[in-house]
Length: 288
Image (cartoon, rainbow, N blue to C red; front, side, top):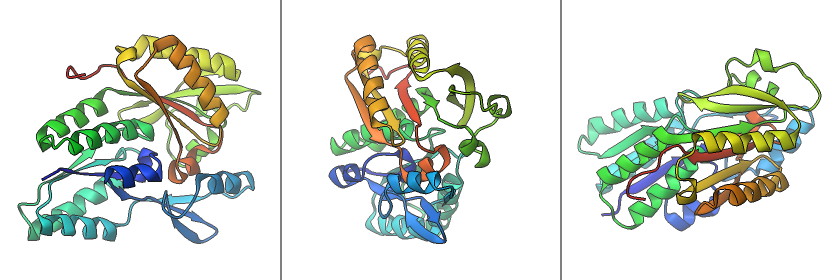
């Protein structure tokens, strides 16, 4: 039986992906003016960015525990094996809740074979892992080999972000060491990465073009066999910026693919518009 792949909406893959690849989606929630929406399913990211521009800050919450219970129980009753590739535990309580619900379900179904992976990743840093896992599952690769690939990619996934304004991330507690970067200087753009699952500012640079060139330099320094991997770009309402970045990456590295996706409503509620994020591996699996 094919291994079931599960993911939450923080992986920032398009809605069509889940349907086409039979991946189970757990949507995070977004609240605007007292109304609650399910990320991917019932709210568009542009709605979030328009809301933020109007001065209203959306609230987000983790995946419903009841949904976890329903899906896990149904899988257990069917005897299905699965891998849930979850949002970093350092950025959301979703992973911890899923583990708690799994423990409860396994009290009734002790042989239920579901593994929950704390990716320590975000956005397409998770999404690229999910994409590959779905491909392997469709080939009926055994669970342990899929899990090995998932864990390898999570460990070696690099994240580079630049945002228009760190205030959104700082207010939501999504960045540490942010105070030194909150100077409000004209056209100063931070570059962030992920350290042990947390977003951390690493540099600040004046001007978009210089930021883009610096990102390429960091990719050269950290990446491995860039021509032999898929590179991800996620963006928050700045598709032209993403396309420009894609062209630079293709010219410099000639990767297998540069995959572009929009940052979803849940993560976009914390980044605001204008965020661009790059994802690649600093070491690739030998099988590739």
